[in-house]
Length: 600
Ligand code: SF4
Image (tube, rainbow, N blue to C red; front, side, top):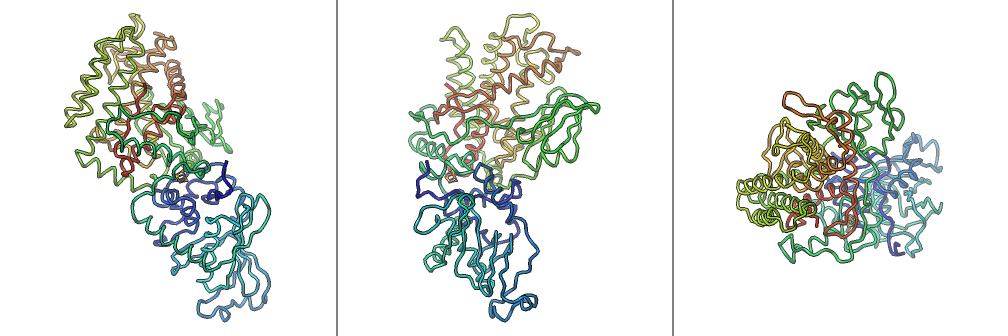
């Protein structure tokens, strides 16, 4: 429950489109002016304002959607004339039209005004003009709070900032009104000296924070986070826990698990899921709020846009311009794979606005030591997770390969160069795969001649390569939506067209997701020899075989496991996103090291 002293979370904007709502989208180019909505957010939580304004983050939740809905009327600009005022002599500057109309009451909606002197810009919901006096009215989604001040500080500051802008534009403005939609009640907020001083102080503090290039720390155990739309991006409790633990120890393997688990602020699963299209010649279009898939004019299926997280197409699939526009506007990437399943490109909207993160990524990649420190975590994590997979399946618990992988893990954490690290990774992979292949069914059709690829020469390697490609695609999307450039890695060398950072991050997840799914589909007979085509020594999957593997892969991503550090249940799909965000937290200096994801 939110306590009574808890302000309602900011509504973060007034339109339903994420891009249009983004503060940077709305204010790019207005140098130096702070949107008054940011004062509301800064007062609620300085980190929230920084994430939105500086890093361009945006996410919807129930509160923001309700806010958008509640604002639908005042968001429609009208054509009413507003009497202009000069700062020096407001009375003398009435427009001719107003002189003719006389001092009557005027309402104007959705008006943008700014003040250079106050350093502020605002989109005002509603202005009520009575003769010489003008009153801003701000619409809020919730109920009137039971407070002597009439409203929480973020709301009072926001309306006061609107009043300051109006005053600087020559209007007589002594109070504002907050209209609470749920209560259908107006609360008058007088602009007294104390509120004006606090508003100006917040402008100063916000400006200092925005230019500091240091994201304010997450709130500690605050009920505000429960209602914050950016909770899945900010990761407040997770970040605080990791900061505390990393101060205690540098040994990842010795980090204690939070005994009773963290508050579960993050939904365990994402509601939207990937849409796969593998019919050759299929046409992807848009009809209303749905994406439709047609083949030779016949509709094969249609899915609500709301339910789609990404669209993955194999080979020759066409799109309508409207479908591309809707998907990219909503931040839904289109992932293009070859008919054989090789991930080669992606269609998405404009680059994420978090340029701060990309600058740090480029700087880190150019620093051999910093890049090595992160690469060690990727490879050590991978070796540890390979060991865990084998330990779960090998009948002989003291198998020499387990001891050997422990040793490689230990050495990887201390590797002094990228070459040493890659050498250790290669040796570990050789021993791991030799043991891994013994876990597959003993069938001549599935005989394996070691790990091979490009092209795979047997069904097992065909499935493994396909799964690695899907995982790389998944992480490319996750990294891009976090604000990274997926093409520049720390371990994998940059190469034209290769998402090196996604390949880096995939290392720790290969055994947990891809290899585990491969074992499942072969051992549970979800694929059979008929699922594969053999051509001149190369092996590919049939459409049906690929469909079975995709189904098993998606099931695996949806599997909920107890997070080894945070102690709550979460799906692998969500874990991929969280790891991408933790990598960003490390690069931006919040976490001393990147914590690779290790299962037990
Ligand atoms: S989740 Fe909490 S700490 Fe993070 S931005 Fe929101 S209110 Fe602030």
